[in-house]
Amino acid sequence: MSNLRVGPKVHVLFRKEDLDGLRLAGKVVIVLDILFATSTIVTAFAHGAIEVIPTLDEWGARAKAAALPEGSFVAAGEINAVTLDGFAPPTPLALLEHGLRGKTLVYSTTNGTVALQLSAGADHVYAGAMLNAEAVVAHVRRHHPDDTVLIVCSGSAGTVNLEDMVGAGYFVDLFAAHLTGMHELSDAAVAVHVLFRAGNPFEALMRSRVGRMMEDRNLVHEVEYASCRSNLSQVPKLVDGRLVLV
Image (cartoon, rainbow, N blue to C red; front, side, top):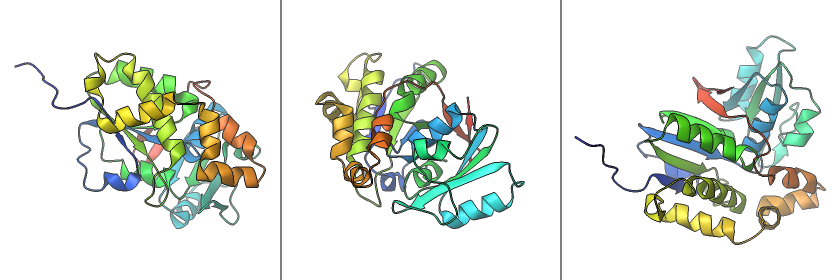
């Protein structure tokens, strides 16, 4: 009996909250938090981190850090865009100043690390960003060619984030180049694809709520960095609650 696909191959969820009750078994999930959690995670691996432990909240991060040998980790994170007390900053370029090579990154954010944890029921979960999109898509196509792909935008506390939708559109654009037609994309996937194609990603990110917040904080360089497309090759995968390179 042939394996017939029921419905589209590539789907997009606009918010992590939409994962509630969703049947993830058998699916490949790519989690996006463009500003900044998954962009930071990919960057950490590119600069020598050996693993990343994403936690649901600050207290989970503190507990994970307390269980690790002193000097073996860097703890970073934020809650509602405020850096946690005693933690390194959560944005990719600022975090690099704290030295990640050979260390574990214990990481807690308001949305991205939560989305990763909520996705753990899927067969395969990857951290994606505009920075590593081509590498992730190539890996998924090579290793999971027949599986349904679910691109999860982390969003922000139940609301939709423009930057994640633009990032999702980039991923859809890359997948679409290898699909047999638009019928393999869900309506949500088509919508973000149209959004991505409509303009310059950096400009779109700067128009987002978080982008405007970064401009007020003189952190436009962090947004510009996160808008770079496929200049990193690292593909982080969630395995037993920890992100490791595949």
